[in-house]
Amino acid sequence: MSKIKSVRILSAGAPKTGVRLCAEAFFGKTGQPFEIEFATAPVIKDRVTAGAANADLIVAPVPAMQGFAADGRIVSEPMPVIGSVTAGVVMRNGACDPDVSSVDGFVAAMLAADRLVFNSASSGQYIADMIERLGIADQVAAKTVRVATGRAVMDYLVEDTADRTIGFCQITEIKLLEHLGVHLVGPLPEAIGKVTTYAAGILASAENQRQALSLIDFMASADGKRIFADSGVV
Image 1 (cartoon, rainbow, N blue to C red):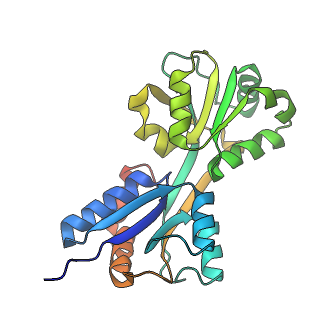
Image 2 (image 1 turned 135 degrees about the horizontal axis):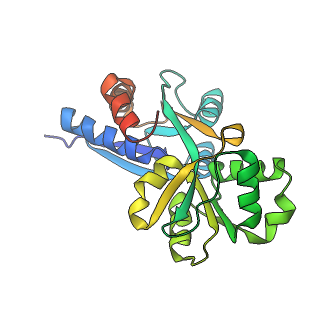
């Protein structure tokens, strides 16, 4: 009997818990094995564009997925939206939580912060752009720290002993990693908040397209949507 070929998944990090749980639930239901890799959205974009994704199924922000479809890199249909993730503020346990109830209060907190920490992925770029739009980029430049991933943001916060080092990350990642010694303060104030919507699609070069399609159908089903919602992707 020939071995069942795995569905290879390349996914952005923010919805990782929902993606993994959906794949595990699909395996439990069908016996379909899978391999999964997580990367930042810019890395995914570079790999897909270079034809080096090494995957059957991609989960990435909707604008990136639309670009892949326009370039013929992924199959344009189906490309279901799996849900959205909100940017949040994260602090080390025991630190002084900033005011996130208003834009003015949060700007004051950022100006008073010891450091501002966010990643170099697309979610972190939004934070950099937000700081620029608020007109405080020059004032906080010397205390801004960029790290590679959301996990690296948490690691930095845990090791930093300052009371006012503010971290930024997707809320799904914060909740997933609170056991490290950090906690979610809340989403960014609504007027400057960021919601990133993710979609799933099949690479045009997929080696296991039929089973990848079945997994995407499961992600878009009522059971899949429930799994994503429970993980914070709504």
